[in-house]
Length: 244
Image (cartoon, rainbow, N blue to C red; front, side):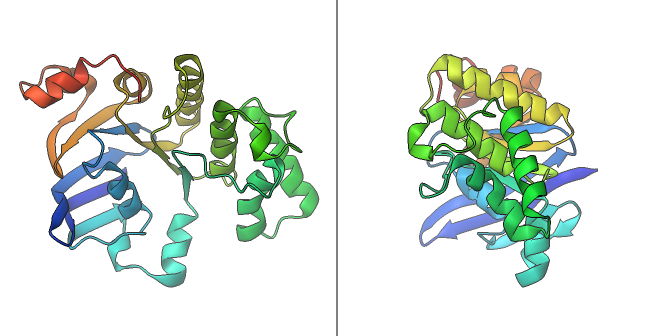
């Protein structure tokens, strides 16, 4: 069963065609890494998956539901099955770390305050921040903010986790720690959709891969498939050793 499927999706903003007849399928429980240069449509692809952007043509399926045809409560129900780890972590600066992680539970469940606090503490412990519940986001390093963002994204145990540039702005050691947390999240049964241009990170996290360039798929498949691609840009990407 596929967790996410794009069927010939195209999207333009004015004269700029961001996605051009894009198709791919992500098996449940696997990590899919979407690779490509900045401005090639990777983040727009994530926004299609959560229904923030609708395609001009084609269809987007999330757990068998065509979300291009959903709105209101139906779309909100699908979104409850997804978590989103933003490139900047996007924590609420006016809330403590613990309140940030508690926020999705307070908004989408009727759990008691005690149960929410206990679960938030556990989610923070899962990412090594159990002692930081009462800190403010401004007191955290970049890596700690990313960890807190992951804890918040996983607060409701979503079936699908969308991740936008997990290693952006992080030093190599911290980036590797975030990668390790994402691998553990996948091992727990969560499907990952990861946008990145950090090839070492993608190799650690991913099961399947696709390279986007100017809105079109240049290559897709396993790491072995991409390594063997004769497409020059794909070769350049796959031999990259730099971070993102």
